[in-house]
Length: 299
Image (cartoon, rainbow, N blue to C red; front, side, top):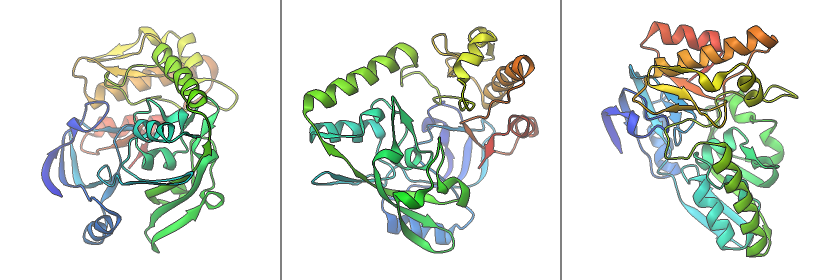
């Protein structure tokens, strides 16, 4: 359950990251609570699909919830641990003729992160189907919040405002025919395959949030971002809001490229793009300076 001097790069979707001082992998909610009591200053992460971990490592403690991955189905209610992959949950719902999670097909993240950020695509989002969530609250311990208490909005939830950790989520889905569900999933898969990089390519999903009433991808394409590259990383040729680490790029390469992309949009349109990617590190001053400039959430 505990590993010291852990090489985290093998877990991150960017395939970037140095050594973490101490890393924990609890396999249940109870184990998670026990670890956090012994390591109150630990950083909690999930599937590491939208976190850029510094190549220079992290001197603190990290708790990863990816092994809290139990699933239970009761009628049209699916309960899933924070570590369950979105793609797996989407397929399981489809296999039980339950609709509402088609948008998660081919998502790189896990349930914890998807609820945390109110993930969505193709007109569906977590807020539409979440019934309740089991959450760790620093002041009160493990609590349950209903959908109404989650304060969902675009790519955010109450968890980001109050440092809550998602441990388990309960989804209320609607029965439908396997044909209808599969049709939605196929449409979503087709869109992702045509517009977004394969999960086999090291990337962190969308790099920047869409500004209100606008599209980060369109803005970035208009300033020629698809031709941008730094070190071992480059902007995806089919969609300008993705960065691919195709040649052993570093976290500094990625941050530098993000800065080039963001600065070009701001210079032309006066729009400051806000990153979706979060950062874990702190051992490199140049990286920290770039994070502050980009307004990246440093966890």
